[in-house]
Length: 147
Image (cartoon, rainbow, N blue to C red; front, side, top):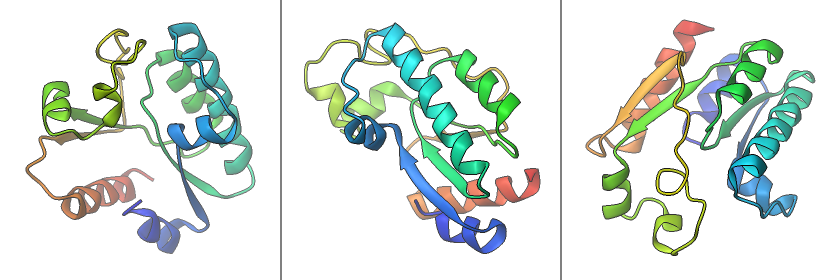
């Protein structure tokens, strides 16, 4: 969300979406591995439809599958893949994601092993020592060098 203003200023109309928001909007409540893949492919198609209309999409999601990333790279113009690398244990201890404390099943990192990106455009290491403003500035700077 913090890079949205900079992206708008440099690249034009931009929206910010998250996988969690789209799941709520479309009432997508299945979390098993196959359902996650199917939903991810739908999200990819949805983002392509928006970007085809010359609107940038900043889409925050736990992108678990190389198949989805490959589809995005092939079909979405100026697609930039950002892998935010973080320690799951620190995420849980610092309570950064509530889902890890609800006792649910089919949780990425606990029950489901993600396919980590093979060739992301950017790797951002988040050890929770930098504040979000500094991290977002770093991300925007790196994006502007890629596009």
